[in-house]
Length: 162
Image (cartoon, rainbow, N blue to C red; front, side, top):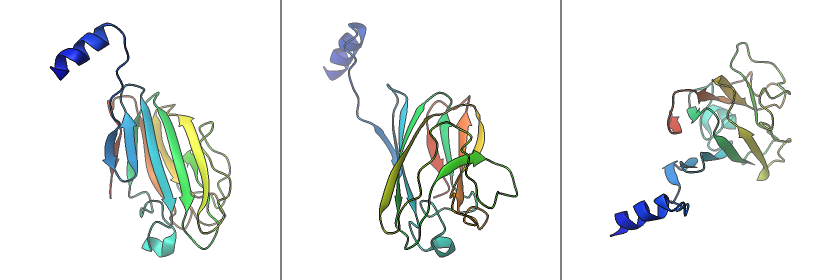
């Protein structure tokens, strides 16, 4: 009976809301609104001496988002030193102090040690490969970055490398 309700509701334009799809502890998404919710934690664990996002470093985790989707990120610093996050071009060598995001809205302010928090909200465009990197001088160059792919062909967000 539920399936008949959904078909009827959708055909009448009632905009039935489904629960978000949980990918893992760091990502969920709503296919109807084409919105991705990310949790990004600097110093999530002791990998690379805490110079990591969600435990990933040196680009070894990959977040893939379909082109045009909205990305809403909650960014938290668990480390005893400041960190930040911003999206930069995926080119090497990485800049010593990245300070200009390549996507509008894709940056945080400097996060205070021990639970500093900010948000990073942006539209996933243009298509390409990027890094989510720490903007504190020396951190990204030391490996504090993970990979972000904005894909023109993906139909749903994914998160690999955990």
